Length: 241
Image (cartoon, rainbow, N blue to C red):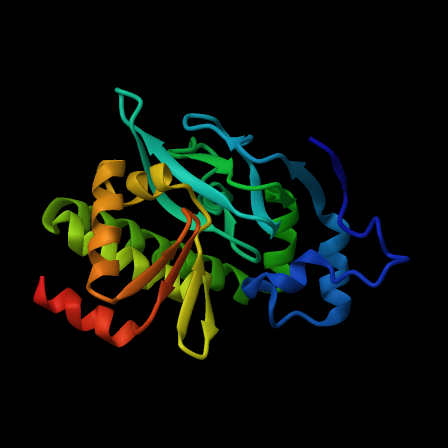
């Protein structure tokens, strides 16, 4: 794990990491550079833990490059992936408002990842100078809580097929690349992790993927690519299940 300042490569024309973060979008270039000087970069290898459930933290973690998964584990060690974060997204925001809170999730790099760190004191200074950032953080917290509520409802009330279709549609939006004939998804996680994300067995995921392929809704390429031929048809199929 290597650490350095955000502006350590100023001689190279590298965009400061705060530029990638929506909550800092309205800041001027001068303000962005001030934030960048407060920021530390840490490199994590694929599979490395960034945070463990039950730990305390006083930092905001921003994904500069790469991707991470945010997970909870049952007492039996079964993983439930809550969400996947990519460039420009962040976690650890709850501790900025309540420093006594401990992490109620674990975070792991799902590929080699660069994280930007801002301490609570730094964020407090930034919010004092730019109060609208506090509102944006609260909106992000609200959106994330809504995602967790939807996830809990889906796991409790929807069958496996519905959950898997919803995941494919979600990944179309977040990880999909538009092609002339449809949308290509480069899966950021393994089939085992896909199963953990939708709360089913790995075999169920493989079986449902094959079914959707037979129906002409998707095309599979190995274990890491899904080509969605028609999002609308997939949405319509969701209502037929």
